[in-house]
Length: 230
Image (cartoon, rainbow, N blue to C red; front, side, top):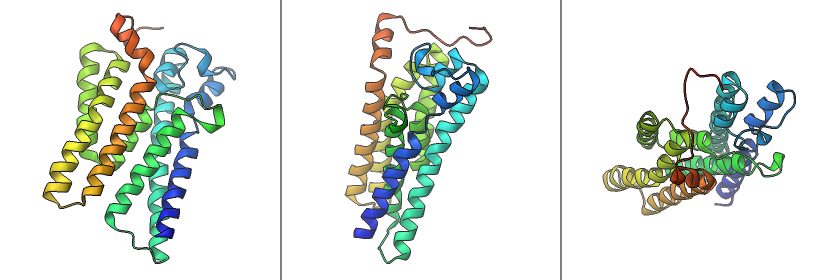
């Protein structure tokens, strides 16, 4: 048990530190003459602000970096648990799944509150998307579909992100309840843990979007306009 707990703790620490590597800050510094993305546009250290304030190439690289750092965090969690298993710990498939959530949530927190950048990071949308994809691809497809429908309808990234964050815990609970708990016989604690983790991530992303929500309610949030130079 102690070995398994240590593996989970290492997964959380690794996830947080990887999440704290903020690619929007790094790439803006590189592409915009050592400037800080947090001093431009919305002030958010994320892909959308990079797209509007720096350019398409840095934005694409930011997306890739923020996604892949969560992939690395989840892979490390599985490696730590596998090592714990080799040392004699009884690591069940459910614990491997929990390890993914631990690393993914920690990575999202690192992105939002990066230790390397004064705890001023982004809003965690891309990193959260990576976490969802790596923990349950079925939930990810539903969240992705929700984001796509809202974005195509309104062309507002923040609105699509807010709706996706709000629906993520609902999708996670329903699919885990009906497919994992009821159909496959997963333990109740797995259902509770997954639901709690999804709710935590969803609420955290919503809180980080509170200023966007205010602008949305006032009709001030700007849509993304393709093919037009900012």
